[in-house]
Image 1 (tube, rainbow, N blue to C red):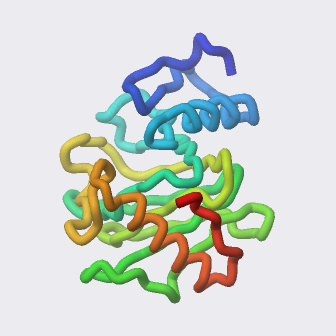
Image 2: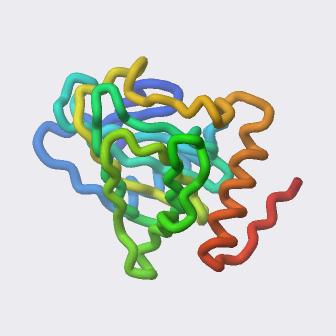
Length: 189
């Protein structure tokens, strides 16, 4: 991908400006991984759709370990969501209505292990996090995108900018790793 095909649309997102077809290749994944590593949020979106009004929202989501994605759902309007792992590995955690992680439904996305994608129905509380450096996902969900109402954030989980957000992420990831028998992460507290 050439830089002329990428446009920065916000501090946390870029967009492709291709006219007809775009190859998603290692160069683009590496570029977005580098952008995510430089970001305060440790993640960055690369939109493939033309705009917020598009009826199908497609994007790359580059995520580094330690990036906190507040549990959320897509309820009003109801939107299903699919996530496909392109590189790295990802922990996917669904929650019940009270905010309890549903251990029996934890999903480890890792192409090397033959686990490629997760499809979630509209209204499901969920979060996900990178388990490896330079994890990149392909996400797709219905549009249009409304930045105000796209996600219903969980009232029982801290906001991204709250002091206890990192501690919350550590607890969820530690539980995920324990349930799935993965090695414990060293958090550097």
